[in-house]
Image (cartoon, rainbow over all chains, first blue to last red; front, top):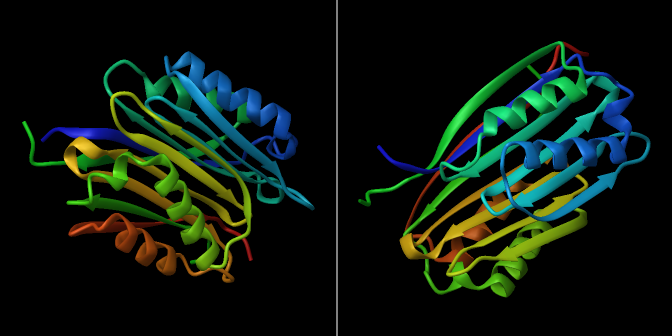
Length: 118
Length: 118
């Protein structure tokens, strides 16, 4: 059955706690993940929270990449939602895992937009 | 088991095709959904695609709301990711369903950040 999009939900545990609280680092990491998986970047929004934590999103022509971090737990929730066959979301996963230093992770893949169309 | 966040993945089918291609309408709808569920808005990014389709995200202090639309199929994929007990994501769902005129929908709820902490 054809789906319009692929949505990867990443649970990133046992990460480098320092980078999880560094909005500049996380922005660079998400933009690098978007670029290296072949996506076209359309927009972005990042926020640093007090006392800790970062939320960020990069809108791509093929959908989005999001991250929310809890440095106090060494945990980040990331989503990579892509459409079409021109991008390789697995490449973005690989980059985020490496840059965040996650020692333990899981991924759920959801297929989005399974429609009754040709 | 305690989870840090609740992530609702909405499949919105048989929507009003006109509003699915109206970036201004969708921005207002997503901001209204964020406000009315009690979230604190931190940032946003919306893009209109050619020949059709819109992607948008609102970053909230409690995580995010995202939407991607396919007007040609009357379909939208929306995500509502919230943390904490002060917001009511179900209220945001209700608003999006109504504003997009979805006649058929499904929701998957994912619990994010199930950690071995007190």
